[in-house]
Length: 148
Image (cartoon, helix red, strand yellow):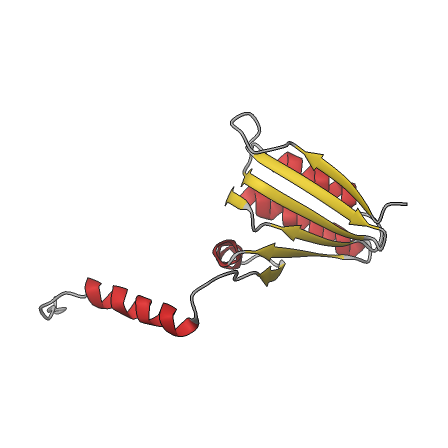
């Protein structure tokens, strides 16, 4: 018996199918759904179908959004619905995202469990220095009068 069952929708993102969704279910019941391409109103049904495929009783689902290029609110709606369904069946759904997509999800105020994969980000001190330098370059050279 294989240790994973794999299902792929699409092969590579293209103009005809700008999304690829791959799901794997381990024998331990843990599922991983990886999405590549764009998740929007036109493609979200593909993601929803794959999530329904892996939603079983006590399912622990990980949705990997690191490879995506775009997502909109329809994607968040489907992820929230899937998380609620998983919890109702005794499982849960966790989203793995890059800092960019984690920020979008956080700003939307949705109740998703996030694991943020920072990957190869510059260390904190370097990033702080770059941000200070950027802000310093944008400040006006002369004092600004804010009185009205």
